[in-house]
Length: 296
Image (cartoon, one colour):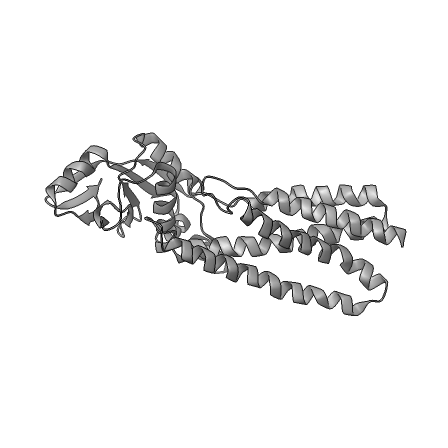
């Protein structure tokens, strides 16, 4: 019984600490502090308990206790719904919305991280029973370090080459290099865009990146993230100053145009590079073609 108690204690501790490790607030201010932290840490603690007690419950032949894992999975799916609904409400008041693809990606992440906490707690508890608490904690820490990279996926710097583009007007049409952005009717708006606007060209590194960049949700995420980092010179009912990331379908390149509050143009390029690649936007046509060639 003492061994099982130590196993459960070690599993809960490592699982909860791992969930705490995965939870961080950055420039996007999400999750908000402190209530967002409280919500996710509470679910993380519950996940750690479920993972820690699974093996001791099986060894004690308490098979009905394991069914709580199924109930937990249902509850953690509710986390995704909770995050999705919350972010959709917040998106209504954003000058530059995240978009549904970005919101769905965030919701998936918060659901998935609770499952990771269960896995860490389960492994820690199991190894503690088989060996001892020191080995169990060591196994939990090793697994946490192994799973740590899952905290962050790919960014745009991994799939595109970002550089400053040349902003120009051809009549009322706004271009960044050779990519058409929008039609601007007011001459006063055109003057402000030429004076304060920043254009960033995104060149995909391969065909996979080109397909990902063509995704509308991914380009909306680029506009939102850069506007969050640099600010945007617009208010409601000023659609011409809304940041846009448009695609040149012939070349696969995209261009972002924004009128930022922060005047540093090089910072805009760095901001583009930090934008996360959305899971829903990832496409791998190049891998598919190579696989077909190899099979032939």
